[in-house]
Length: 424
Image (cartoon, rainbow, N blue to C red; front, side, top):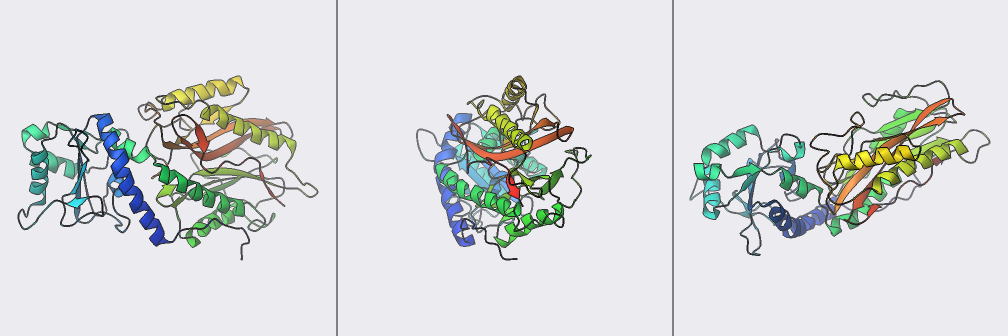
């Protein structure tokens, strides 16, 4: 099939790599010093080996590296007094343009001994490593590497080992202006793919199945040279007797029919940034030119629920605080919300505060207690139940859009869906 839908331009792999490498240099010079001083840590050690990479280390590798090489050791040191950070690689070669070679195997054949020498020479007060009980993205140091590091360090340095949990989360969650400029383009591509999928270019009512649309979403990203980070969902709600599917499972494939309310959940990976979007469409019945008023109103209630959540964003508030405020205020407005929003960026379910889980509306221990910081991105994911008299039952108006909190205002990265897509 030939598609007439105009798509935003997608950069070549070469241009994407050059862009990401440039971002890494900017991030290292701006985010890292502020982050390490905020957390009172003067040394951060990251260690990984091929095929078992730390999620944080992966974001610090040059674009031409697909992963760690042998055992990759990175060392970040803050000498203080306003001096620039040292970013070193205990490796045989530079790790990109940021981490400079700091090991001569001819002079010291033992890589671990060389790492200890680098640490001893700088005598840090705190040595952060990526170990975390509750945040998977901050728990990238393997048990073997942790045990080996403790065994190799002398006792006085071993005692200075501390968790790098907040360093890892802060690094992963913080966005720079250059990334956010490009993020609008990334989201624009995701939105264009969904708009195409929810159109008559892809859907022939009475013939096309929800599974057909799912695989179109996957194939379209693949043809554009983009990744996806989860298998998409496309589901139907309709007037006929049909129960709401459980979030713990996937909806069954079904033939799309006139009168259906369609919903998708879709996320791409482009320029190392993830998207996560849930949009909705209506399949017109013969003679209809617009969605019924009751579905338009249900859609409006979903948007209102999103507004309640985003209006509560404030620096220092925890995910659990945002969740509680949204549920109380939403119910005061006559809404029936369920909130399960999350950070987004380098990862789809990104580092930062969890704002509810679909099965934990009373708050999420630890991960929900993490606070909101400026310059962070979020996927505003939620639903509100709406009773439709015309259908004689509840529907879920499920919505999700990605936005950015700059410390003062919350804005959607590429806008949000303002009305239902219409399929003729």
